[in-house]
Amino acid sequence: MLFNLVELAQNWLDERGLYAVIQVMYQLEFRAFLAVLMAFAIVRLGGPRVIGWLRHRKVGDNPEFNNLTLNELMKEKAATPTMGGLLVIGSIVVTSLLVADLWHSMPAKVAIVVMLMLAVLGSFDDWMKLNTARRQPGSRDGLFPWEKLLFQFGIGAVGAWFLWRNAQSVDSLVLNLPFQRTYPPTPVMESIVQPPAIAPHVIVLGMIGFTLIGMLMIALTSNAVNLTDGMDGLATGLVLIASFMAMAVVAIATSPRASYFLMVPHVPAASELMVIAGAMCGACMGFLWFNCQPASVFMGDTGSLALGGLLAVIFVAVRQEFLLLIVGGIFYLEAVSVLLQVAGFKLTRRFTGTGRRLFRCAPIHHHFQLGGWKETQTVVRFWLLGVLLAMVSLVFLKLR
Image (cartoon, rainbow, N blue to C red):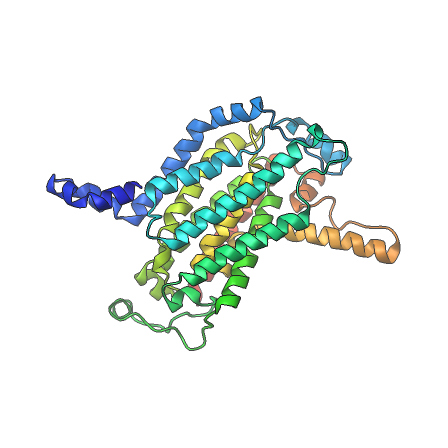
């Protein structure tokens, strides 16, 4: 909104000697870092009031891990307000409306809409869980896993289709594989004068391929972040690291000089996603203020599903799905640990009559907690691994 107002009033501002205002608002990097500060301020200032409202409404968590030892370790978290994702998502939306150019950017619109749809799904699931005790005895607590997955795949398919439908160049549709050059090596100055053609070996995705990959990434990442959100600050800190990387990746993908030099897809239409990634980064920084141990509030499914989906949309839009698998490696490790735990238990019960678990408890962060790591140790060590994976992703981005 602020960008669009400056755009509309640029002649008026120029006549009054305020060209500097026009110039700075047209700088994408300035608006992205402004979004970081603005989103952080919104969450930091609005946090106490929102947390107080959630506490007053008795929107408190009552964790159940089906493990007596873990229940004992986590019992002090009972009644901590959840659905704090409303604060994070609200901050991202407000900041994006103020600073980003949503009017002219379809990828930015898709990112916001997918995030909001997943936030609605998550809040519905949270509300059902929180109100189980108020309903008739025997009522289920939350959505069934298959119901949640069905909605996630549906939302992911719609978002991916819109990204495909509004792609402005072939570069926006390539399958960017690890170590693969999207463009042949070209001198930087020459590539800016005459953009290089797509290398002959690069796969250009059609509607089905693009939509399928995008749908899987959005649903998988949304679920993975949701499963990671089990300790104070764990998911928030990892999303913060990933959102910093998202800003860097969008900056590279939307810059002709950087994208042609690194030989990665050039997607100029996705430039406003850098501002949204900045808003996500700032909102997570602000939320971590309240979510670090001992947490005053949890984000719940409302926040984790939405943030995971938003992260996936950004990387899909700039054709860096494989890079997201590295950046978000901890998220996917958590998801895989749950799948292995469930599959291993069912298989051993079928063949031996007694189900055996691969881990002490899944997701895997609880495995380490039950193994003797303190919660703060687990969280900080997972953060450090997240930073390390972000650095590894930068190496993969350079090696072509």
